[in-house]
Length: 109
Image (cartoon, rainbow, N blue to C red; front, side, top):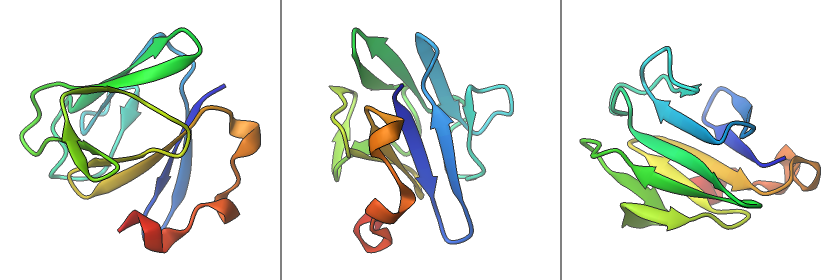
């Protein structure tokens, strides 16, 4: 099962992508709710596309970046870094291949 790993100064959180569509945003009722005031209430959605996922920006105020490039819609690859405002999430195709020790915090900046 694919996952997103949220890493910031104080925490690491793993979100499983088990829904066909997962909405990411600041609102508490989002599938993936983030505590970042710069993230839009409904910022982006992640859509299951066969065995992989794609991310689509929902016309957010601060945009969605994948690996440093602003995107509207893109297929995700294992290890992609998704930046929503100041929040960084790392996409992994398989949670069994991912451990927090393999993600370098310095590369998230």
